[in-house]
Image 1: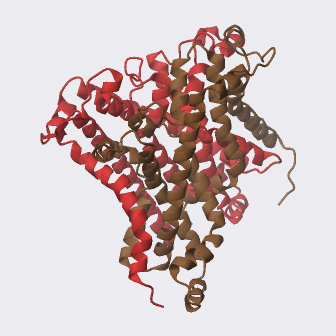
Image 2: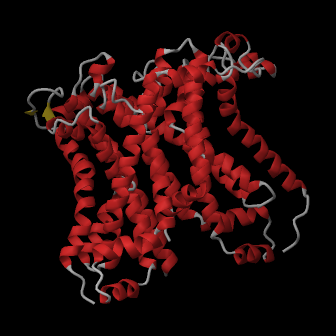
Image 3: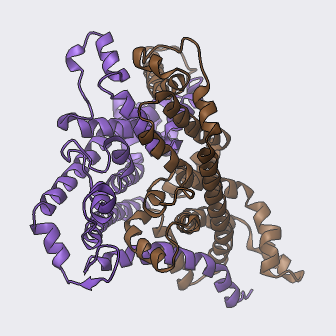
Amino acid sequence: MARKKISLSNIIITTFLLVYSAYVIYPLFLMVMTSLKPTMEIMKNPLALPTKPIFTGFIRIFRDANFLLYLKNSVFVTVLALTFSLTSSIFLSYALARYDGKTVNRLYFLFLAGMIIPIRLGVLFLNVMLNALGMLDSLFSLVLIYTAMSIPFSMYILTGYIRMIPREMDEAAFIDGCSSFQMIPKMIVPLLKPAIATVAIYNFLPIWNDVYFPLIFIFDSSKKTFMQYVTLFFGQYQTDWNLVFAALTFATLVSLGFYAIGSKQLVQGLTAGALKG
Amino acid sequence: MKRSKTAFWIFVIPSLVIYVTFMLVPLVASLGLSFFEWTGYGAKKFVGFSNYIKLFTEEPNNQRLGNALKNNAYFFVITMLIQNVLALVLAVFLQKGLRGFKTLRTIFFAPCTVSVIIVGFLWTLIYNPIWGPLNNILAGIGLEKLQMAWLGNKATALPAIAVANAWQYSGIPMMLFVAGLNAIPNELYEACAVDGGNEWHKFRHVTIPSIKSVILIVSTMTFVGNFSSFEIIYAMEGTLAGPNYATDVMGTLFYRTAFGARTGSPADMGLGATIAAVMSVVIGVGVLFWLRLYIKQDDTKGS
């Protein structure tokens, strides 16, 4: 292949991509800048950089007891849902990868279907069910919904990984007198680490960012999630822009920070989930 | 080696119970609810197809349904045109692999990780007619004539939302296209060059046919995403999906109908379930259509 030269087409392509990246960054940049300006200045000079950055918005949200409570609620829901879905999916995937037969195949496709069907279409019956179980308005109901939502993708990735581990390995362990219950955590899980990272990171965002299920199932003001809080906040303080933007900025930084840590896994998960093989 | 069947079921059952209880049963049983009349509290009454008759023939339900389906289709078409075409262009350009392009790719994907609700709020402010940057920028470059209340105007509201949505999500199809492009063997391009093909020929006769399955999956994802969307409209136009229902999609219509008590009108869960059933059928048909094409394509590849 010829060495890359500075050609006209490369200049055009680079310019296009740079302009587009400015377009992608601008709204986020504007949000951060606005969060550092007093409300009066936002109204007068919406596009200018802050004359003197202020952090009062951030200080006020961090002093807000609800802010910390809702953050805690979201962490609780997310951590539990990820733990449940990961633990159950590891065993599920092991079974689907190591056993053969029609039932196994059917189960595989039953779970796989969940990757494309939006769970929210069943929200009305979930409402009836949670009501009957006395679980409306409970963070734990969100945990179970998100667990169910995360299982198909986790199963898909983990099963693929386990299939690549030679079966002789578990057989050797069985001969040594290991039961499957000991063997999975001791031998399989350590080998699955990269897959587990992909699954955890890929499933984190839709759970953390979700506002649909809390909007429908959570009313008690002490049980709201963080994104629900941001939503309410936007409505409640519509005139106090400095505060609103501080809240939006903080919420965005959490997501972007997470992306910075796990972008590789996230992209891997995305492409593996959508493209075969 | 024989593996124990009991162990198999012990491994499968926890996931199966959660998945079936909180996903499959609700999906199927919600369809069943469309045959009942009930407001969410108190007893349900079996009413046969009367909810369907109410939805398809009675005003204003039938108008709202038609309007929401039309808006969803419109939203889908705009998204395909701006988000997915843009994503393909970005992927093809990134494929040139010049220095720094990896960083750009990371930037392009970043908005996908932000909550839809935040993206919606952010763009509401960008479109703000009084101090929003968009109108200010238009004024700055001498295009005052184009200034308007983007979200308050019936003609521009839905496209404006689609632009915000595309700003957030073009990164996802872009990544899928990048993965698809990476899988094309270089020999195909070389063969095309030997035959005297230029860049356009390569794109038309090598790139596009090679990433057909990616195009299919991107279209399906967009279809399913649009026909179950709710948050972006909710964040930018509220549950009433104004102005005058110009941005009302199936998701907002469903929410208002089923949980209407929170938006000022009476709740009608039976009718809501009927709307959800229509959504399930539309999404189901879309997915099946894609599956058929996908399988057909796979067959031709295999033979």
